[in-house]
Length: 302
Image (cartoon, rainbow, N blue to C red; front, side, top):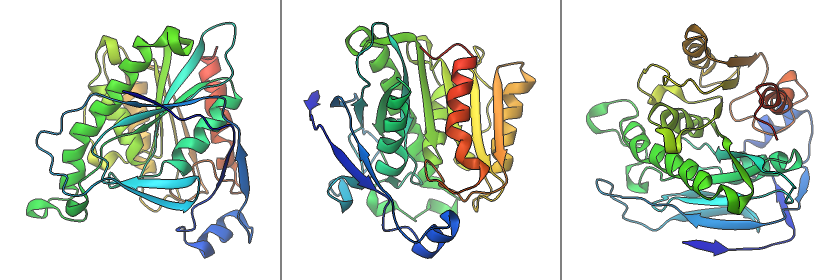
């Protein structure tokens, strides 16, 4: 099912739910920037799904911080939001974007739409994934006191949403003016885990051509060997991450490097967890440009 939702102008600013003191210290500023995003087209596609084994007792929740800034909880129906650049004379590169949120929320603006806008500026088609989340009544509840029990269980469903996203984009490559051999997936924190798990479990029709997990939440992923086809890997993280994700991120990079697969790791010193597209004044601000340069270097940027 496709829903059309055309809006010529979007205005976003960072969520006020952030710790404001920490926010200002990190960026050395005392105010919030307002960003204007002009998106040429937008559609929302409902993906195939099966919720057998999941227990959603409440409807999906959308928490708004402004008219156009929001995150989601209790997502039971996966959707894919298309943010396409101006149509070019040749097919473009596409990237599925998986926002983070600890598998209990989806930071759709901060790690989704704002990233899509930046990708569009580079001529890349962006597809922001709203994957299924832990049912609201199970948040912070782990059966048998097993760490992250529900988050790990949820990943078995959420990664399928990522695989269906890749398959949908590839099947509709002509419609979206996409090169079917240049479809990547990136994700932030829990969204990085979704992207990686999807890569591990992918088949020919839904495998990504490259992946870019950004401060991926590796603790909920079972240790696995990289897929035999070895999609190029780009990883960005920081040693200052309060969730201590730099070492697991480095181990992911090593898994790829030991197989001789194309891989690149950027482990910055400064930068808290969730830095995303926020400007901090530190070298970590360059991660996005480094990723774009890497995509071009491996021949995946049209």
